[in-house]
Amino acid sequence: MHFWPDLPDTVKRRRKLFKAHDVLFHQGDRVSSIFYLESGRVQLVRYLEDGSSVVLHVAHHGDTFAEASLFAATYHCDAVAEVDSNVLAISKRDFLSVIGATADGALALAKLLALQVRDLRAKLETRSIRSASERLMAWLRMQANGNPPTVVLDRNWTDISAEVGLTREALYRTLPLLQKQGRIRRGGDTIVLLDGSTRSHSRAIQKSVR
Amino acid sequence: MHFWPDLPDTVKRRRKLFKAHDVLFHQGDRVSSIFYLESGRVQLVRYLEDGSSVVLHVAHHGDTFAEASLFAATYHCDAVAEVDSNVLAISKRDFLSVIGATADGALALAKLLALQVRDLRAKLETRSIRSASERLMAWLRMQANGNPPTVVLDRNWTDISAEVGLTREALYRTLPLLQKQGRIRRGGDTIVLLDGSTRSHSRAIQKSVR
DNA sequence: CGATAATTTGATCAATATCAAATATCGTGG
DNA sequence: CCACGATATTTGATATTGATCAAATTATCG
Image 1 (cartoon, protein in one colour):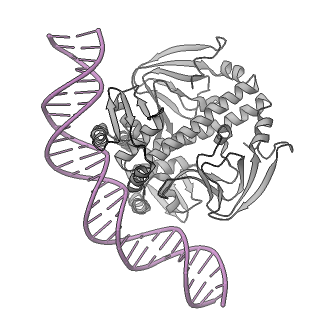
Image 2 (cartoon, rainbow over the protein chains, first blue to last red):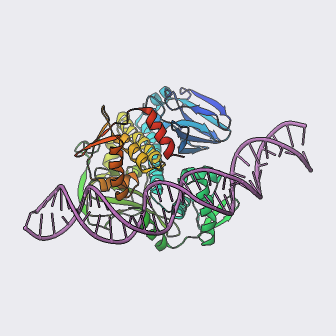
Image 3 (cartoon, each protein chain N blue to C red):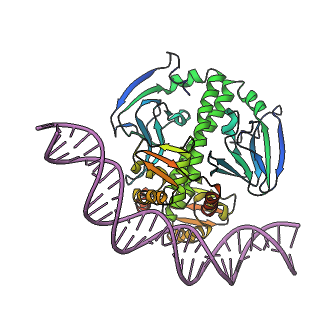
């Protein structure tokens, strides 16, 4: 994963600073770089004709993004800084010639992409859950780690609602509901999942996924 | 994608039959194979520390699954046959040694995974469209090629409804609706998209996505 | 030809989207 | 430290849409 910063000097890199809401690249732009996010947060967003948007991916510090574009001529989405962000723009041409030079390098790239496939599949599956409560719980479980499973939020609920696939209103209504049911506990920006039993959940999944 | 069946004979493959509810592998099992699903349906399920579970992916016939596990020591989820299923188990070691032997091979794998990433992102985007008509149109556009854009179905609508994220009833009601609106034309298992103008489309999207 | 799965239509309901607005919080400049 | 504007969170009322349950019809396949 951290082989990106470790690339040889022959791979041109440019450090760039973006302010919140700055656009790193637009859908349709010729692919010149892939990116390593040193700090901040960048959304990959697809803007539809009417200006509405879908969040395709949220890159966090330490993530690389737009690698899928390595094999494409143009970017297939917009990249927008959610907050002030510090990125390394890595030349696509240089990168490919270095990474593609050795089997190990190319395999490392494949590995990174494999992880993304996994993550995306999980998100897709989450979207198949119709009930707001169950979908949110599934999303939380995906983010959680530790025992008891705990999620520490690094962004606001409004942003999260888009990723979960609910309106923010629905999300804001579901949260206290889950709390009342004793399935989560909220404290500041941490959520503890108390949903120990598999049974109720699997039944919920069964109802919601065909 | 059709990369997998075209592997040289040196890559060991075993055809295996599983009955409904059979487990192909367990979370934590050593990764020995990746799989190509010839027929049937296989669920990838993840069990969390507290015993709850999330369905990560449902593989349908023609899909490869567990490729993401190529780079992991152990499977990160369980694979369970939903119905009787027919899979090709491809030796991970053989596969990796063939693919990983050359930079070109590994790049081909990376490219495949990159395409999957893009495809999954597109699917995720589709799921954000709330209106049944628009979501179905978006799905059709994704599948279509040629001019006029045409989709040739390789499975029944009931299966497709699951992928689109609608009940089959909703799908079966949406189809004649789109027809009546002159947005598609149906003939047997081919659908022709008549939604040529960007304008009408953008307006329609406007209604359906927030 | 019978059985099984796929497609189609009908009626009703529940859930979440939508529109609206109030309150709370945060960040910034004075 | 305060005031102010911008953003985030919360609550309310209502409408729509697709889910759900039911059943009929049609196609498919031994």
